[in-house]
Amino acid sequence: MEVIRIHHPLDPRQIPDDPVVLAMGFFDGVHRGHQAVIKRAKALATAKHVKLAVLTYDHRPALVYRPLTGDDRKYLSTPERKLQQLDRLGVDRVFLVSYTGDFSAQTPQEFVDHYLVAFHTVVAVAGFDHTYGKKDVATMTRLPAYAQGRFEVETVAKEASDREKISSTRIRQAMKDGAIDDANNLLGYLYRSTGVVVHGEARGRTIGFPTANVLTPENEWIPGIGVYTARLKVGAIWYPGMISVGRNDTFGDNRPITVEMNLLDYQGNLYGENVEVEWHHRLRGQVKFASAEDLITQLQKDEVATRDYFSQVAAD
Figure (tube, rainbow, N blue to C red):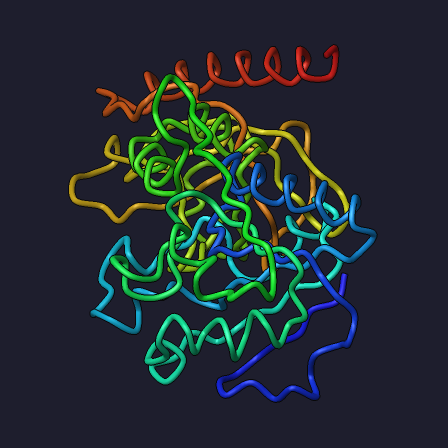
């Protein structure tokens, strides 16, 4: 997959001469709704014997318009992971635009003239609620007028689950709630995050459940407090285990949230490893136990549930 990184104003020399069907969107998470847009664009590109291209952005456009705080700074897919997902969907070319104040200052007509036409678009495809400027004028309904017959416009209807629109907002709420099973269903794949293994309090090894403490980037979503089944990628190998997002309240109050993973049957030194976590299934919420012994009893039950889960996954 070819990736063309663009900073406004566009240098036409960056753009290949061949025509494309162009799917447009920020695509945070590249969830099932986004996949429907890209699959429709792929079908059109195949029918017209041209390449499938995607126009997306390197960060959330809202950053240009207002201060981003807290959860607004987090992404379901970093630019690197987004590109990986687009590649898996068969995209031939990605126009990765840096969303700046100057870029946002364009009128809808200027955006169409300077970008969509310059990309040699034969069909522009996006979701029904996609905008490319001010929401009241930069709509998919108005895009054919701005196109002025230079390319076709295809609008993809909403993708729904349980009668609700599949959206990045809905997935982010599921992540916040710790509902990773719901988030994965809406994404259409198992959510992944990254991190590096660092030293913790080493308390896990004293109770028979040594953990890898994963320091996670501030700009990536992590499921809410709870205990989950997951896999940890070290190098090229995936290791199954159970992972806790929580404060270890059993050992004191007002502790910081940590991400700690106990790997099944693993022996080795993971400190300093850059890792990837694949989040599978929620086992339970966090509990403040009366004693370390009660915690150990629960962890033993969690281990049994985790082994059963991955045995079933292997069987399927």
